[in-house]
Amino acid sequence: MPEPIPAAPVGSVPAAVPAAVPASPAPSRIVLVGYGPVGARLVEELLPVVRAGLATLTVVGAESADAYNRVLIADYAVGRSDRDTLEVTDTDAARAAGVDIRTGEIVTRINRVRRTVTLGDGTDLGYDRLVLATGARANVPTLDGVTRLRRTLMRPPTDAGALDTADAPMPRGVTALRDLDDAATVLETVRSGGRIVVLGAGVLGMELALAAAQAGSDVCVVYHADIPLNRNLDRGGGTVLARSARRAGVTIVSHARAESILFTVDADGHDRFDALICADGKQIPGDLLVLSCGIGARTELAGLAGLSVSTGILVDESLRSWTDPAVFAIGDCAHVAPRPAPGASTATPAGGPTGLIGPGWRQADWLAARFAAEIEHDARAGAVTSPATAAADVAAPADFGPALAVQAHGVVMLKAEGIDVVAAGDTSADPWDIDPAHPDDGHGAAEPVHGRDCAAAPGATAPRLGVSQWSDPEHGRYVKMVTRGGILTGFICVGMPRTGAELTLLFERGSELPADRSLLLRYDGPDVDPAGGGDAFAPDATVCWCNGVTVGAITASAAAGNTDVACIGSATRAGTGCGGCRGRIGEVLERFALTNSTEIVG
Image 1 (cartoon, rainbow, N blue to C red):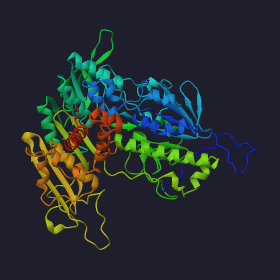
Image 2 (tube, one colour):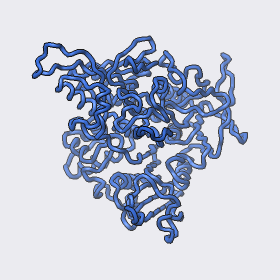
Image 3 (cartoon, rainbow, N blue to C red):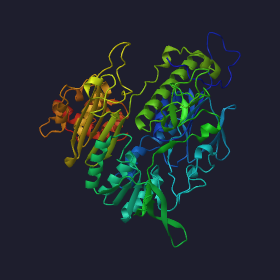
Image 4 (cartoon, helix red, strand yellow):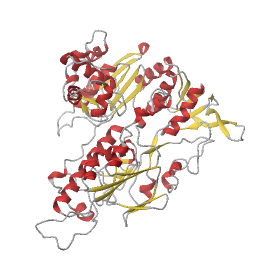
């Protein structure tokens, strides 16, 4: 059971209160820094304690817009979806409930002694619990012509609009794709028929390139690696994805190390991007350069306050800072790692922020439930637990809830029209590698697979490793399955959406694969019956990984009258994260219609 999360004493208890009637403590002051999709989820989940007057909640967001879903921003940037599709919360409802939401403002300093945060205009806000959901910014690669600053060592600017550009604005014609302003820049180029050069071939870069190509743009993706999505795919899966992207109209330039930018000069004398220059002398012309070189957590605010940081703000399994028990972090800025024991190594812990919206939402849900349980406990007891007491009290009351569940490997999906990619777990093993635990087999992994492996008892033989691959590059299909003792520990699936959905289900459950792995390929065959599946439609089968929504929750919502994908999203949040499960939601609704004679709207 995690330790109780601390809250600072606020207010005072009247001396005349009888001992038998505990006095109600003053409302707990919660300050949230960051109003992205993860911060917005925390606000929604804390509304009950705010409405009850047990807590005050102040939110400070640097962007002037209300919270929106950044995961779907590629579609918005090419005009394939409108602003409403990005909505993730009802800001007006939160304000009506009493939440103080301040958009377009920035926190420049944390005073941990006084327990205040200072805004850009000099205003101080007091807190009992401080939650950092500052998110991440786009990495700026080393390019001659682009100023690159280590913002993790800089004090935040007083102007919220310059959070990621102060002292080093991007040249004209160069942008990342992290916010609505970036999306507007891309959309202008798409509508004008300009050529887009994307530097980097991660999930966002490939999604943008494929979406822009479908919208009719001339797009080129440039990357240094051998394959796109090289952190998630192996050579086979990446090669098939690259071929599929070329067929979709995207120019692919691999093994290209970008070195500098060639500029042209506008009429007003300002430089504008004209071409990307690679180390081998290759010049790739374009009208817009989109930097898609990964992200880095915004840790400068925490670091300057003396909080422990690494690749993110270091927090323990209860999402509490290693350094200060009154400070918490969630989402893309949080690096969850066990707090080291006294005298233990001070080396930077492995891992880092996941960069996925699903784990961030689960963190927000868990932390809000924990806060609510503690605040309600304090209200019943008539006192507020001090941070020092809370930090020392390891045994949390039962009503404070269960521990934050340890997340397995995330499932990564690429969403593009006609190109389906899903990958999870460790897929580094190849069929002909030697498995040290079974060297006489002649195949297996050169290194043991980590993460979901079955732990062998002392003296016992390690579970046998198996790797199955199937490839059809001509038709854009590739599947790789890695197992230990028959249990799926990692997979890659390109161009086979139904097989990918089934493998996702098996991976989630830690299920054993059939002895004949080829049976799984038949889910994408021409004679498959979507309504005739078995486990894929079990009530506890997860459909939406971002929000943890099951088949049972979707069918229950459909039975209540929500018979289209949009209504299911509003009622259950399914499909409102990365959007990759919307097809599966439609299949569940179709199956519900077949068994209940209900008309389903697509």
